[in-house]
Length: 511
Image (cartoon, rainbow, N blue to C red; front, side, top):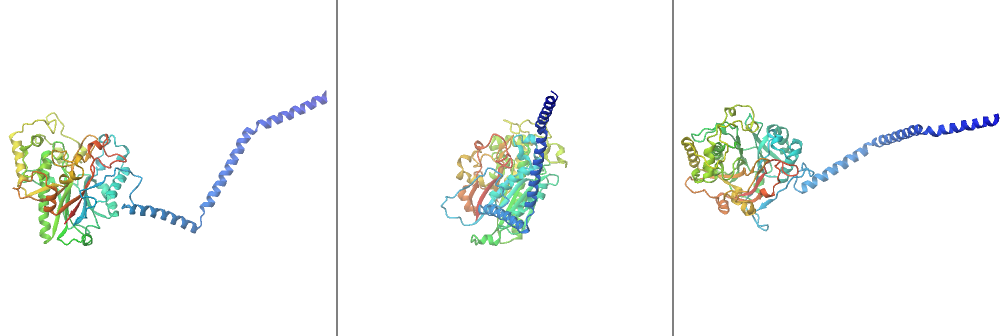
């Protein structure tokens, strides 16, 4: 019994030990797995460290491979006519240049030139509440890439730009333009965060500019008519001379010397129609003054004058019609007469005379019950004083022997007839601005020429007659979509447009 009992105890003890050994491995397994994992990790690190210790020859080969890959990408972009800065991952709506000439037509005689005008939307003016549907594109690091791609893709010879941030110009655009082969000039009112810029290809025009004129509308009277309020709006005009090598490429034997090119951004206020109309007189008057100066200082030369920008006016408004439909008669159109006279009833705040920021940022600071409620009333009875002031401005415009011809107005119907002539028979496209709260046409490229003050130039110039009289043949237009093709949401927007405005551009041949 004792021996059996001892045997049983031994067996039992063995069984317990065995069971205990079978229970322990759960902890033991975890430890072993951790140990194995640690060992494998160490082995991987050792392998990685071993592989990272490349020889100088191997490092050199890797660098060469990376450079070859980068060069292949750049060469592919250059083959497409694009600068290597072009980012193929940044999408936007690419619009074609619509040709006036048949595809099999002989190339025109003359110096080709593409002119773009673009309100870029100043970053300093962006407020989320104004662009509630624009999302991530409002961030500068996103939008700057989209805008850059547009410039590189369209590659105009001259860019007339508005709402260019001073900080962004100094820290970003100036260097970018230079890298892309452009020179540039920037001007702003010192109290504003943004201004206007003209940028031109160095391969087309000689280095620097022949002359420059800066326009400060608040300091410029229109005859005996003073500014109604401080607007801080400006303009810039340059005289650019063609490179001889560029002219020789087209076998041009003429006195054609260069171009006078200007850009501006007129007063934005809804009740600013009278002041904008006064500012358009300043535009023509200053171009006349600049032309005279250029011709005196550069005798026996030939210059073509263009002026582009955001005029904050539609083709049926007095600012536009006062320079394109001469002699102008405000009484001939009820809407035109009503709007300009009503704008004189608006009382601008004296705060606008201060230096405390942009009007666009401050918004409409004059809102009150005593102000007119609509800038476009169905009817308005002007006071004698208001009527007299409008008649004086009309007289000032008609006394100036200069006029403007919108390039889109006279020929866009030839390439896109369903989107021309939508603004009361002026031949213009429907829209160039597609913001969240407002849509319409505000941007123009004008050819500026003399007018004898007696000839009836109230109608649109005939396309062929314009070419013959001015030695300027318009050959292509950058397509502008009608409103029916636009999205319900406003611009800017990722994969669409980089501004709430759309760029406009024409190709012309100068004989």
